[in-house]
Length: 108
Image 1 (cartoon, rainbow, N blue to C red):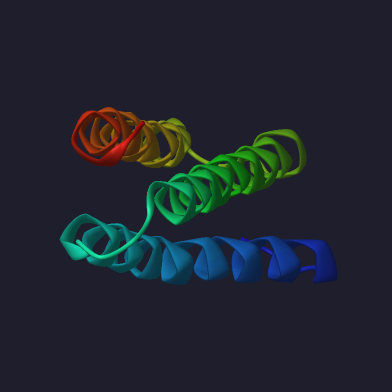
Image 2 (cartoon, rainbow, N blue to C red):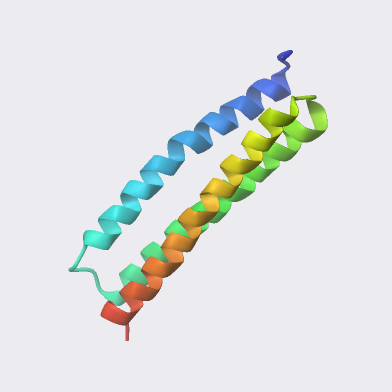
C-alpha cells in the first residue's frame, strides 16, 4: 500500500477510533456501577455515551468510505473493515438496553 498524506491521516483516524472504544466501554461500566447519581445526571451520561458511539460510527464509516474509494484493497480487507464497523453496533444496542434498565430502576 502506498502512503500518501491522506492515507496516513486515515490510518491515524482508525487508530484513534480503536483507542477511544475501550475508554468508552470503561465509562459505561462505571456508569453501571454508580448508585448515587440522580436520574438527570444518569440521563445526561447516557446521552454522552450514545453521542460518543454515534460519532465513532460516523468517523469509522467516513474512514472506511475513504479506503473503499481511494485505495484498491483486497476484498478480504474490505470485508474485515466492514465487520469492524458492524462490531460497533452491538455496543450501541447494549447502551440502549442498559439505558432502559436504568430508567426502570432510577427514572421518574
